[in-house]
Amino acid sequence: MQEGTASQGGGATADFHGQKLLPAVRRMKDLEYLLTTGYTWLVLLESHISQLSSITRLAAQHRKQLLVHVDLIQGLKNDDYGIEFLCQTVRPAGIISTRSGAVATAKKHKAVAIQRHFLLDSLALDMSYKLSDKIRPDYIEVMPGVMPQIIAEMAGRLDIPILAGA
Image 1 (cartoon, helix red, strand yellow):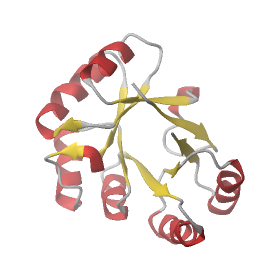
Image 2 (cartoon, rainbow, N blue to C red):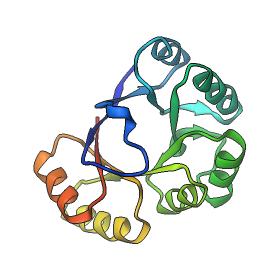
Image 3 (tube, one colour):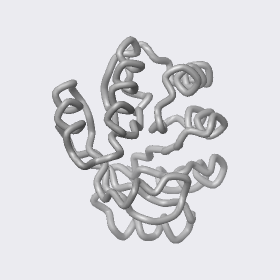
């Protein structure tokens, strides 16, 4: 199990119940373990589309909120129709994606919408500002998450909570 994201920033549609770490689920063993912990919010990084409904139901039975990284789900196209299907049929608590269209569609369906940005250089940072101003995701996940000065700058400029990805 990889520990996925740590929260930075404040106040959007979900506060993650004060949870400072969003653990990542890569395998079913990770999920089985995390269902027994005090974590409420979990990030599903890898899965197959045929498993999404059962994983989401299992998480809900254990009072867990599932954030699905839609770019990493095999068999799911992360376009508007794929995200609409996910939100209407599977109904996770939210989605994570690098694709702005996927994030915008999730917001339309009232799911927590997290935009993932890879900040490799100043051009990527500028593009992140433009996309975030346009889409207004509920959260932004910054990769890599070991840039405290950049995260603080983004949080001050965008007024959108920032998650530091690992």
